[in-house]
Length: 228
Length: 412
Image (cartoon, rainbow over all chains, first blue to last red; front, side, top):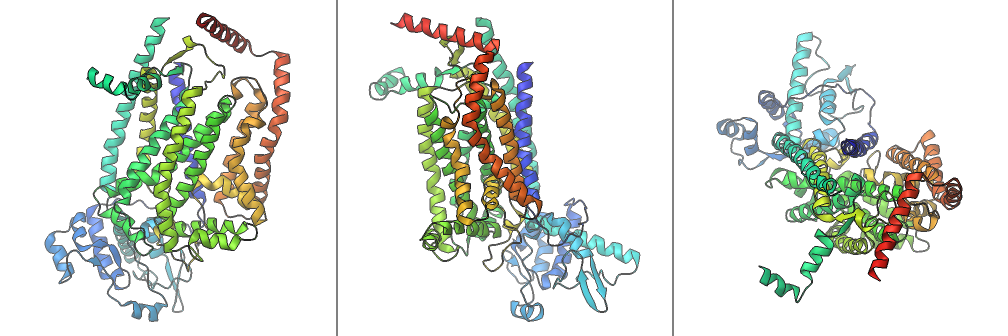
């Protein structure tokens, strides 16, 4: 009983030591704007990822590259070889998704080259929520666009949120924003699904192993009591 | 087989080593789970070296390629994400385990005679570990890697007379650049092997003085049990529990210990809004910032890490068992732990408003506790001796020393 107690204490202390870090690490971030991010959950289902990929391809790709995603990798979210071939045209299948506008043109229009989006969902705190909220909080005042999450943003209102008055249109834009965010979340970590599947088995394995090791330890140590 | 063994044993004390230092190595039977962490630290060291070597096979130490090569490992190398996340999580796990290992030593007073050299080699290991972790953090070449290294190397500007030259010499240029990256990579690969060497010295010292134990009293032979199978069983159980927690972070929260800013490639022209070191440096970083003067801050930070080495001199008490039997020292210990946590919190936040004062007060308490220890431990020693030690301790000391004496007489 005493040993069980000790072992529980050991686990609790180790866990709390690790969790304290969480607290510190998350405490370390200063956000540029205090606008509350919309707390939506992302499911990474294939239909949504594919819709998001198409939105990226039709809208975002004009200015933003996705340099760590190659055409062939798109098959991992359920596109068939034919669909990918249709998308890429005569671009090689092992090429990365690049933007369609030139840096020079973008520079003259926006004063800077828009960032690559491959890692955007990891490069901001609460990345996916950040991207989603940013895309959906554009507003217009006398022809001047503003964004609630990123005041002074150079990026135009890509999904036309600011002018959407109709409620059903607003909902449609929001679901578009969610889809494209799902796709960017996948792009930032295409191995996440595999990682979690393997991880489940690994953690279960070590759980069972630890229970067994605990009983082995008990059995070995019981020899000492017999000696007495 | 036995023929081969005797051939080897005639030339190298292999059997003797296995018997005396592995299987039959006498270990106090009353060790608690807190004594698992040295073994765990050794395990994490091996894990870091192995994962690190595999990373080095794919990583490119070049300012224009480093960031891309890490993403290449994450996306294209087979199980590269696993190797990389084991290594990045392993760094945090290493410090977590080492901090607990140190806290155990402080709590139970294990640094006292005859284990001073264990404590001091441990102090050397802590410094090596910190240097290795700091240099390794530059290698992904993200924004926080770059600016963290910029801020920390800049501290050497405080060197009297030749400060600016020292900074340029360390960086291999006027700011962090390709030259810094390549030298940090070379040293980051070298230092773990120095750590292995010092760990061996640490272990030789351990096997000479043997493990301390929660009672703090040298135990007679009857209370020491062979390392194998008792402590191999116990250490492996501890390892299993450790691996559950470790793998949970590796597979489900791998970005947890990685700043979001470090997923942005290093940009020398754009300073992040808030530069934060890794969590394990935060308390020391808070001490650095609490002193308004650069040189003073650097000295205070250095002292805050090195002051542990003075513990065998500062603690004047002869009561065994550390905080277990010493009520005042126990209070000191817990105040210290809380103080370090507060410092960590202050170090993670921007230095504004009331946090500046909290940081300064905590820094004062940090050093104050060490300063108080010599006087307090003498007073406490006298008070405890006058009042009498708890009955269980008295009985234990008596019975163990009688046992040891008996044994000594038998031998003469």
